[in-house]
Amino acid sequence: MNRASLLFVLLVVPACATAPASVPAASPEAPAPSASAPAPSEDARLAALLEEDWQWRLRENPLFATAIGDSRYDDRLTDLSFEAIDRREQHALDVRRQLQGIDPARLSESSRLDYQLFLRELEESIEGQRFPTEYLQLSQLGGPHTLLPELALSMPRATVKNHEDFLQRMKLLPVYVEQSIALMRKGAEAGITPPRVTLREVAGLLQKQLVDDPTKSPIYLNAFASFPASIPPEDQARLREQAIVALRESVLPAYRELHRFFVSEYLPRTRETIGLSAVPEGAAWYAWNVRRLTTTDLSPEQIHELGLSEVARIRAEMEQVKAQAGFKGNLPAFFHFLRTDPRFFFDSRDALLVAYRDISKRIDPELPRLFGRLPRLPYGVFPVPEYSEKTQTTAYYMRGSQAAGRAGRYYANTYDLKSRPKWEMEALSLHEAVPGHHLQISLMQELEALPAFRRYGGYTAFVEGWGLYAESLGSELGLYRDPYARFGQLTYEMWRAVRLVVDTGMHAKRWTREQAIQFFKDNASKTEHDITVEVDRYLVWPGQALAYKLGELKLKELRALATQELGPRFDVRAFHDEVLGQGALPLSFLEARVKSWVERQKATVSGPVR
Image (cartoon, rainbow, N blue to C red; front, top):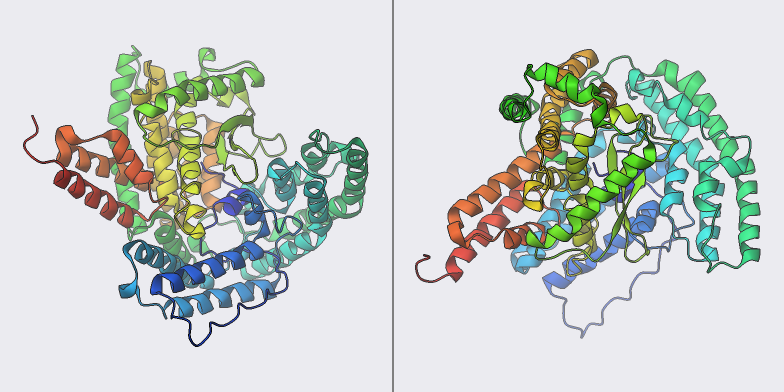
């Protein structure tokens, strides 16, 4: 998963999303061209519009700017005021009007693709303005209470100014929390809240931030407990002092108010229903989510049926692997064996983390066999922070930034060791690190010829579809050497097939939460804790979980097509480079690109192939 939390949204916010942020004074307008100057080309007009909009977005979303290595707005937090939200919605309408003044027929081929993608995202964003996503500011996966602790993990740290900027963000937290509360209050009035059952642990998560000693705060520990040698000792002491003051006077009072509001006002008013279809305009909202996140026109019903067929197919493969493992019982008994036998679990968090790091470093040297281009940016493996581990998923990836000097970070959950089986670790590492999220996202950031909205944006079906497809490459990379690891890969593929059934079941077919959990348990060997966390994730992130399997199926379909069409000419390294060579794309655009590549490959080989 590419970060199922608020920070995930900040890191992979779609290029045309109207993500909230504070706004500085408007910059001066560029001087008008002289009357004698030649008219700019259509390509140049488009490039100028894209750049102007990109700079607007970085100002509007300073957290995203920080994430991609642009430090100009590191002292700002999101403006969540109603006025700011209205302003962003109007901006999208204005930009679409400007874009429609550009003639796509006069664009070069590469610029025409930029135009099509930009227009597509604008249209989706504008269509989504009818759905008040901004009311959903807090869930078990993240919110105002996790924003600063997580930001402290990824903030630039080399200079005094980096830390002073972060101190300013700490001082701004009370306004951010106040605005979040105003949005959640309005959401409660409209009946638009997360399902109450998903929020059962949130009061405890909030409580973890309410430390008596500011030096025990995750924010302080992540940002001020240690400093790089480039910061003089006297500045370190001053910054620590100021951090303690900011925590006492700004951060902790804001957290206490958020905790009070959540416990006494918000939680009692949250909805007891679970599916998005139960809220006002919920069915249309879910359908929009599905189209946007899967980049397909498939209906929830079609996806549900596809999920059922995939579950049946993968279950048959599981039966074969169970037989290879020499297990004599039925599949449910094998699931129980895999969930409970002590041989499949570590006894310490450190041992689990070391094993994840070992797997990752065994994969790295095998990558050149499948990829012609590899990213320059390294990555590391880290434990999920303790303040969020109980309600967080098994693992996630946080993108790095060459500009910010920050490596990619693969987070593995070390909470509740008996829910972290060894047999799932190889598939998980392939997905989150390499050749999954780290490889794909880092390569995309290095495509400097692309406009910034494409280098740093993304389509969930492509990004998560690639992550799931990467799991299937394990055997080609020397992994899955025993039947249990192979079964782990099938478990993860089944997990994504189950999602198609469960997500659509709860949000479109009025399934109960218990029904979803039971379907999951009947068809996957994941532990009960993981299953519960996953189902609750689908409840607060409707439609996102559908993108994985649909994206993976399209990638496998395109690889099969290229293999069949090219025969001995097929080069898997060239295929992968082609798939990743234009960054993330909607699935229909990807299909057209790969088919065009196949035809070019055919045309470049003359004579019979023997």
